[in-house]
Image 1 (tube, rainbow, N blue to C red):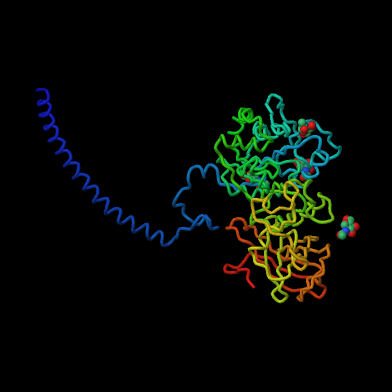
Image 2: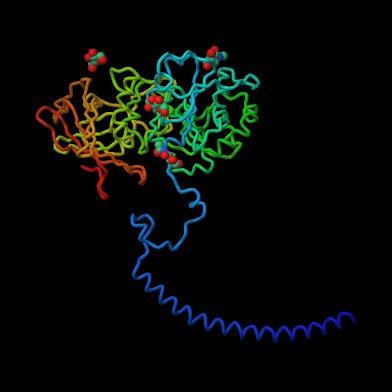
Length: 497
Ligand SMILES: *[C@@H]1O[C@H](CO)[C@@H](O)[C@H](O)[C@H]1NC(C)=O
Ligand SMILES: *[C@@H]1O[C@H](CO)[C@@H](O)[C@H](O)[C@H]1NC(C)=O
Ligand SMILES: *[C@@H]1O[C@H](CO)[C@@H](O)[C@H](O)[C@H]1NC(C)=O
Ligand SMILES: *[C@@H]1O[C@H](CO)[C@@H](O)[C@H](O)[C@H]1NC(C)=O
């Protein structure tokens, strides 16, 4: 019974709602028609309006002339986008008091007083020289006590724990306006402008762990291909460093058998779940001897760091390590983005191949060699076990020279100037090692005494897809000076004879 009663009531209810629906529909139809007429007129008006004032994209300079048809997203209004600059980076340099007097000279080479921010973290107090030395170095700090942590690697040094905690200790300083924490050793040389350029590619509000593995295949197998090697330096974005700080001390206790500091960071990154973002301009330099081959065929990426400055030979001949880097700083000042960038061209008349490593060295080879060979580093260096092997590297290498005639004529940078009028760099390179006699019947590069390279800096070089620069031999003077121009390649330009 109760169910039938309900049914009756329901049908009554249905009838009433149907009448209301009809009334409402009619009402809406009226409104819709009048709105249609109104909006037709409105559309015509706004169309006229747009004909008179075309919409300009906000990138044009005449912003004040333009209407603002779309308001930018709220967060953009609050925090206008600002490119990362040097002030957003805080460096954490791991150092030892024992080597301080020697190593501080490397830091002074790249540290920019009142521009770079950061600290050197030492195991104990060091004597500070009188005068203004403290003005040209980062703030010196003593790392926190790590004796409570377990360390069980049979050959390593427990200072690895202290150095890996530099990230957390730096976060705890609570510095303002930090986007990136960049770690390095006391024997790491940073090219700061290029470091900034690389970090500009990444959103510092997200989790990023950026660096490079080693040049040694064995080191990468022992540690990890996915580990940023600490000496080459690595960057951790602000929020990731905060996440690391919250867990690092617990994390370190889980890995007492690891060797050093960077493998401990890597282990914690694995726990957080953040992979290594590889940037090939960070150079750990786990090699010995002469790194000429690696630098003269640098990957097409900004040069960010050089490490193991005491292990390798000075990068320029007949100089000290410090003098060599002082010399590299000259081209770095006038065109940091172009530093070490290779370009390859031919002197077709003489059948020579020229390879320019801008700001560092120029090589002349007898014969026409392909770009695919020239871009491969020559094995001028020894592997991590001081052997001249070719299977030791996670990249291709080639022999330095097979016979006396194929040995390149190497010219090293001696002079750097910047022409303010032409807005152009002029770098000069000279040869200071004699080449052996060669029986080939062809033009002899021995006549070339020096090389002058003209190049305009390209501030947008790394904002574009990577591409090697092009070079062109302009002339050879009677005094034996070869003049070369280096510039961006034409769209369809290729390196061919
Ligand atoms: C770096 O960017 C900030 C804005 O985030 C700006 O206030 C500061 O002046 C810039 N510093 C340099 C050295 O360009
Ligand atoms: C850095 O700034 C301080 C004070 O602002 C000044 O005394 C000092 O000379 C500056 N140092 C350099 C190397 O410019
Ligand atoms: C570890 O390195 C420090 C210098 O940082 C040194 O004083 C100490 O003797 C080393 N310890 C071992 C066990 O090699
Ligand atoms: C090496 O440098 C020293 C002093 O800096 C100089 O006297 C000498 O001539 C140089 N040797 C060569 C081969 O350039």
